[in-house]
Length: 453
Image (cartoon, one colour):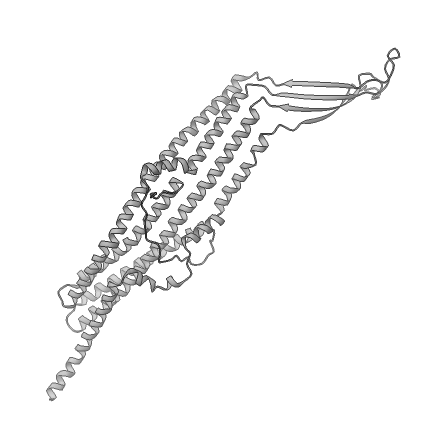
């Protein structure tokens, strides 16, 4: 009996350590098998006030100073056509004619008169209409620029918001893996204490923990910079910490085919409409340059008041005078001035045509590039979510079970967990990249990009 008590007393610490090892393994298994949504839902960040994507877009559109600047520039442009399409102001004149310098008596000489006149300049027919047309096209181009600026702002806000979403998920995964590795450290330390583990396994687990800490520092720094960019876009530079929801709609729609997207961009893209309006404005200026070969007209009338009496053989008071005047400018320097102006305006028209073709090519290239990136990211997101991550999670659980019975070394267990960590990060990165590609595609097309059922 005494021998039995001694044996039980000696085995009790080992049993306690073995029991602790089993408890830790159960905790690790529950963590590795938990779905991502369950882990993220427990985060304190999820319960804090968040900035949804729709809220960020609404604030940016309402308050972004660059967009407001473009809007003010358009409003200034819109006020020009009514000004340049109106006749010049008439000219009212007062003249004193034929005053005698010896007496300055207005009744001394019969030709002395005090005149009141009015004149009006009339540009050659068609010039005013072309001036108004040119300014109207420039105003339309300014409005198109507002729409293009808004599209780019929406693109940038969406891109920044989804980058923050990815970084938050990556930080959550890092936190989760830190917890798991701490449990791994506890496991290997326990096994080492009971004589079935190696000290190098403890050091390896601690090294992986340090690597995760380094990744957390890097991700945190990137997130601060991205949050500052988003606050700039929504005109909230002094805003506190920006939080975005951890739970989002993960559905990725089907895109229309590229030919349809090209056609929509040709019709909807504000940048293309802006260049077309600038081309029309350049054509109007070319028409004006050609009209400059024709003269303008000035029509006027003067009424002259006279004092004194007529000669005795005529009798009576002197009659007033009425004068009518027509003047025409003479375009007598066609080569040096007007022909050069026509050449200049012709070159401007050509420049706008080339700019339109260049912008079309750029839009088509951006559509193709964004479509390819979206398709790749969407396929990767589906593959990680439905295939790779579940398999990697099962691999970790299998490795952990094998490690408990000394059939798997600790290095392979750690590698499997690090691989799972990488896959989970790529899963959320693929979702972010897909939505960023959608944002660029929407901006490149200027409208809806999904497939119409």
